[in-house]
Length: 278
Ligand code: SF4
View 1 (spheres, rainbow, N blue to C red):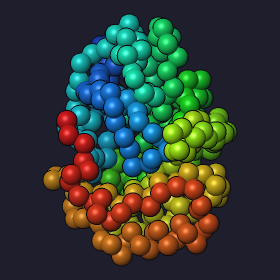
View 2: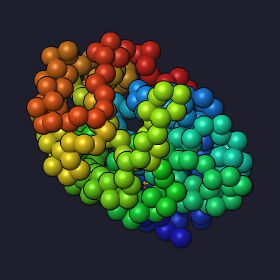
View 3: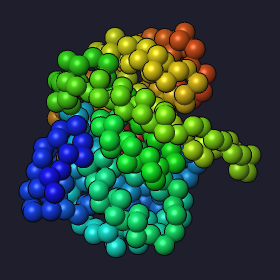
């Protein structure tokens, strides 16, 4: 079957041994699984993170470039993926899952348990993929990276990112309403949507317009995570750290728009120590 699982729409026969833009073949590739992991957003609680190799977006500044640029990791067929999912002690956090959507569906169908699933995506998704993912997803944890198509083209080779990710975001919002629970005094998002935006150097206008888009399309009640942790990855662009003033301008714009749920990051997060090790 030809693959159209993401907006790249390569149409390659992955079951027949071909690979497309993402590098993914017939089986999922898991680069790393971490049983007990926590995120910048405390409302997610502890998660079991499954990092997939390869990526359908491919950003120049990717912090996980060791596993995303080449589709690295062990191959997991449906049964082995189901075993991995069944063994998760916490909600399952599927990191960069888009190009393995078909394999994930097969794995989940073979699970003995019904894991809670966080679909942790770049936001570069087709409406059809969001629809499929919503059948098993409890929390969509999505990036909204660009409102500026030129920046999206230059940094992620995806000039259509703004329109594609906006449609995906709206679809995610339609698919899940926020449901909260309190566990051990902590307020956790049991089901719902979290939108992440990473502020990039020299792209304050892009960030301001991205926030405008999020506010307009899904409202300012959405859980927003405004991230300052950009770190140059050594060979990509942008190649300089974020300035405090750049983050401040964007954070003030978020407040002006009226976002009231979510997180700002300490500016000290813009250090390499926050980059996952693979
Ligand atoms: S998932 Fe991979 S092979 Fe399929 S359309 Fe996207 S980039 Fe191409």
